[in-house]
Length: 430
Image 1 (cartoon, rainbow, N blue to C red):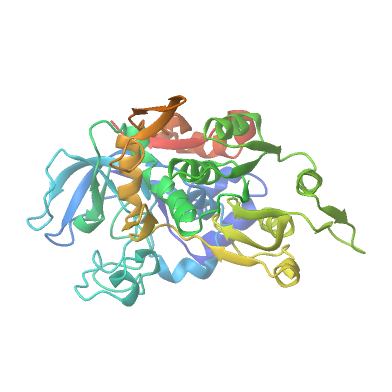
Image 2: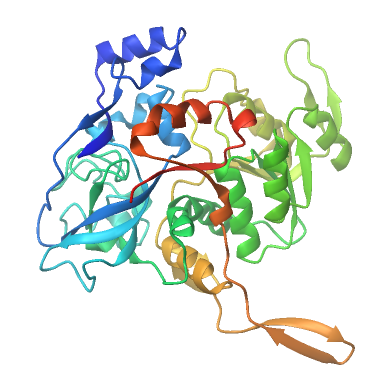
């Protein structure tokens, strides 16, 4: 079968770093670390595993960062090469072991990508997995599998940028019949947004800033609204189509990312901008209460620290790398609480329970608000009527679909989001 793989080596890195200045296509034509190639179908490690035929394999920003060699080498010990890309997924089971649970051949499923203790064959869980914090597993490079934090970065599991991939039954979730394939393909990234929204929720009177209106920024916004947040949410968006998507998902205000948004936010929050001897302006007073940084770039992180009020909170949701142009002084001067939201886990606090992010995502997509109560709506004084919550539809965020052989076109298009108006692109398999 055909698969898009990443095979790291120092010579390939060197070629990619040097040659991409001439043409970015060198990054995926086989001269650097990424290439499309024929590979054998992955085989079940044991009877607890299933094989899944891919329907959609989502193209994530972290995948593109890896292809463009922007990802920090910090994570390389928790990867194994060559790996097949693709941790965002939906597909149908085509093979299963005798101890693979209550799944059936032909059933539509999504896979929670984390390769924690159970997929790695450990019956005695590490201290974090035992608590359901599987994103913090201490065994991502141990057990029966080669190193890899998630499917799509481990050579033994395959990934959704191919016709088939593998999953341990503990990773697999049934897709409800009324959840479309497009919605199901977004369960994994939406769960990242849910983790940020539920682990680090705003207070009712907070002013929230979301830096970035790419997929993660939009899905963090969607998660905040879908889980009941009524707070004021401002979104910094660079393009009109991103602004339109943010409004549709419930943004209170759009801040133009191509404008002087530092001045705009200072004005809105009663702050003033001061000019240091050299460097960027700093804010005195004012600032938002809570910032979700959803880009991961130096500029976005740096601005997030400047735009958050004294003793405010900055949540890093976008994947950062090795920063070269971030001034960390605001953390000290403002006593900021800077924390990170890393992937997702199984103890997300929601409506008095601790649940897996995938469970919450699928139920929101299937039934709407995850509650046994009905939403109450005031009609006229003294009377209350009820209406059932509506399922959450995110399928419209999937704006582009490509065959696997069209990978070069897909990557080139995603480099020019302003012109292509791409939000989420996926590889499509019949």
